Amino acid sequence: MAHLTFITSNAAKVALAAERLRPYGVSVEQASLELEEVQSFDVVEVATNKARHAMSTLKSPFFVEDSGFYINALKGFPGPLIKPIIQTLGEDKLTGLVGPNESRDVEVLSVLVLANPIDGTINTFQGSYLGTLATQPRGDHTRGWLLSRLFIPQGWNATLAELNETEWGQFLDDFRQNDHFDKLGKWLSEQEKQTSHHP
Image (cartoon, rainbow, N blue to C red; front, side, top):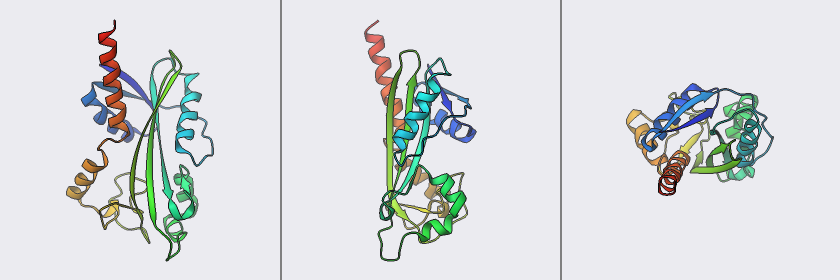
């Protein structure tokens, strides 16, 4: 079984990663490191920079994850800066930044960067989900997701925080089709096959 370190201080994220990668024969352990975070609207650049920074500390393969919330009407703002923006402005002010006659279309982009300090390689895996920004924060079931009260997934009329458990399960089944964890797991499986065929 392959073994990877997930650099994050969030234990819930580690549990999710372990659950998602287990079918691909990958075990996951947590490591917390203070990583340099570049101020960029490009979530791939932010995650890749973190991985390069961590390479000098870790000696075995690891990955980092980052997400961005891109609001079309705001030219992609706040992107990867969603956490400090919500902490500073609050949910209500963020939803109010888009005018009544403007598009409320958004994209959630999640990125995993797999780094191998042994050979210096870096691989990036992306998953995205489209939806709209709610006109005001709605719902109580945040389930630890920062965007739960703001994001209405494509095909739904409710925010994530308004979904009941059955609906949440349906959303996750859809959301996880070929997402960044799936792509990482498939890539690792392919690498494993190639290695076993070429000793």
